[in-house]
Length: 232
View 1 (cartoon, rainbow, N blue to C red):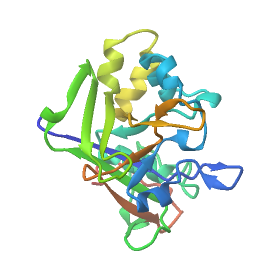
View 2: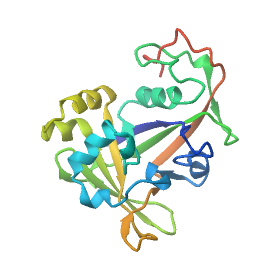
View 3: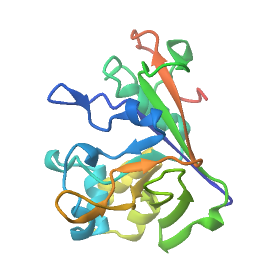
View 4: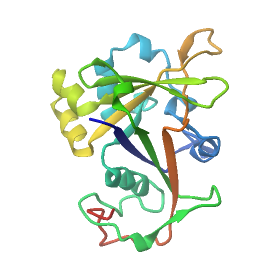
């Protein structure tokens, strides 16, 4: 593998107390940052007290109280990421299926404002040799972030298919989902001292030059009889 390209679709429409989005996507994209769900709650110490396999499985099949995970989900396939971004927007829930096909006449790219419905985020690491393999399916990557607080940003990348296939411990159902979604997980590993006087991984991930994004608007919510297949 000479380079690694991954995609994430995100609308961040879930609300806390009907007030704000969990990951503060619109604000953070303007600042060229991504956030995990931990920006709005959860237990950051789980990254140090729970083993990796447990946390990966819990992210793929989250229990309600465990939805605030450390990971951001990405996919090897741009169309799968596009599907997740589009289908989770409040106006399109239940109206788009991965097995069907999206007609792009219903979607337009938004350039000028933060009034968008979902974003497609792209990670591109052009030289795979810069990635350190920690174990089978798990890699560490350090990149220049152009961020004052974290000038060098550290992420862990998990190829969930390879990782789960190599750690078969009641993971059959998780592996089916991982294969279907071509899923990778990204774990931000920038340490900071928080109000509980403990060091944890920051929920904020600077994008640097390795991440880019496009914003999209749903023009028409009459989204029946459309497919996502081969639309790219």
